[in-house]
Length: 245
Length: 314
Image (cartoon, rainbow over all chains, first blue to last red; front, side, top):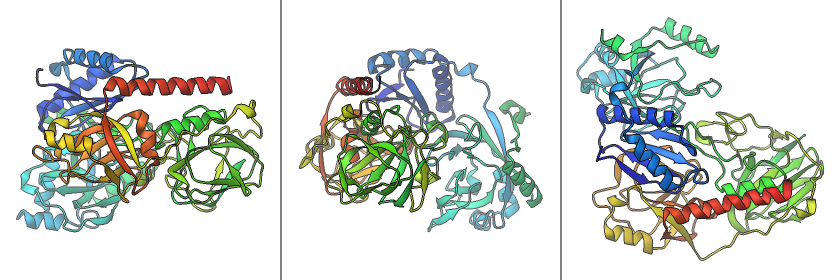
């Protein structure tokens, strides 16, 4: 606990820093701190943003002043109980690999001396921890991709990538939640909307959950896309220990 | 019951105080660049302080009133007129249906805020009317205003009570070099003593690459101990990032929620009104203050706004 630092991030935010590396252990402590923070319902906290190594607490100094908040945030550290954390939830994301949806999958395969089928096999066998969201609304920073399919970014980024595209950049994998420019190697696309402003929960993934990709065919892609359009598709979700069995 | 955009100006968007509660999902706060100016504009026309306003940049729009309504302009002096008659800032004005509000050349500052009595008919997205253009979220169809857009009034009011009381003096003061107060951190320990000294003693120039996301500065290189990259953490309004180039970037309304550059200090909330008015070529220097000082100024400012609201609208 001694290594937790409370950093001043202006007059309306404090960053609680748990370490200076990307690790599952730090992530679990951050998740536990977020849970403690939500339970505490400290007056004046506007929102909290978890990242790889910290939680930034945004607050309103008219409702709570710095010294007072700091005392409360420090006290919460002792309430952290990593052992009481429920196992992270797994969200299954269906992906149509290759073809127009994943134009770079052949390159990823060639780069790693694999077949396309092997790339899909490796990509779908991983369990990817959502460390944080950022960059654009709904963009997940995932950990846990196999080095066997690691591939450098495109030398020239694409101007526009469709929403739902699944890509690889070095040893990272991720999903583009919105149509945007980008330089990741695209290996497939999900019909699931990671972001939909009209949904009760506009952003599907949450930090601390796990993503599991599963391969689908064109017919299934179209079926899910139609359901999503009507607002009726639900991703499979289950606790992590179930996946271990 | 609307206004029609005859000419959108350079960059006119619908903004309120920002979209809070979704930063953990990567959704930027966005919102007005100067919260105080927008709050005052709203108070002047009898609205709640958080009501959506139009934020105009340098070259403001030409807008036709399709119904009688009151409005007020605050922030920068962007030279407005109503059917040719000069319109003062920080004063509630009644406009008649058919009249045209026109902005011409900017005289002082960079951004003005227009509030309309009763507010604009904008559907909130994730609890806010603010426009975040990069992801087409919120505001008027997720974008800046364009010619022929028609924006509805929710509850227009041809004449407000206490009309004679509804003005305050503009506090826009221009300087050769603006002093901006900062609170040090969260990564001030990533810089050498010399680097900190450079930051607090140099004069920086606002670059042409500045926008609602960030104000890029040019000047003396701020020295890091080992480099400008960190493992990403959260970003506040006014955070001063210093990447390895040593040239600071002040993160503003459309800032990303998280970032991987060292942040040497943070502009205090009270001084964000200065940041909203800076134009390329303007010069600033930084002065360090305590968190207590920063919060005292903000608390005082909010109390003054409540008082103003009470005097005009209760």
